[in-house]
Length: 235
Image (cartoon, rainbow, N blue to C red; front, side, top):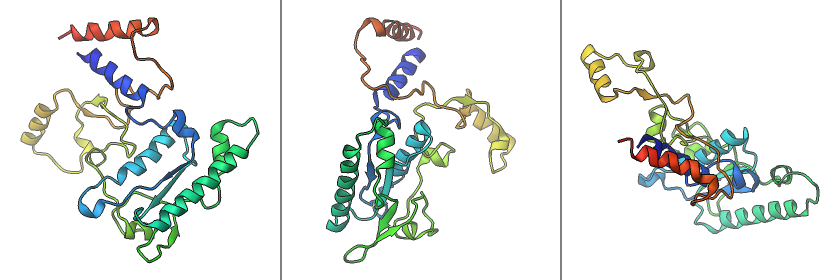
């Protein structure tokens, strides 16, 4: 079953079921502007920051990713987003050079394509400011639109949240900011007999997205299917 599980995880990465930062995402203009829902207990704004981290993880930088925050249900921000995106795409299409698609996206980014957030004023005002994940009032945008973390990051995982199954390591009490009693240490060992997540390493079967890959029965997939079948018979 382990081989089957590892194969399924690999396919999730390769196919884009787990959003990857390479492939087409690395070479298109992105204005990431989702509705703010944190106040209602729906803490999912972190995912917008995770997308940027996945782009950085795959490409070392994410200049094609612009992050806006605010209430995108209002007319002004949406009209502005469409206007900036239109100028960006038009500039890219007008670039007749032999540069790569990613290079064209980066160098043709309009001046208005910068990080920021909208206020609650009428009409909303745009604040130009780098966007960071924080629930503290440590910036104008974080004061207006605080973002909250998620369980795996609190447990030590990366903001990119791109580890479907973590690599394991032996329990090391030095990793914890609290002191465990001997009984608590024994209990921890019983709960995690194989070890705990090593967040410093890539996840199990973590591979880049493969554009245009076939996942059906084919000669090129023959050995992969054999591995899966063998894994299914291991248990």
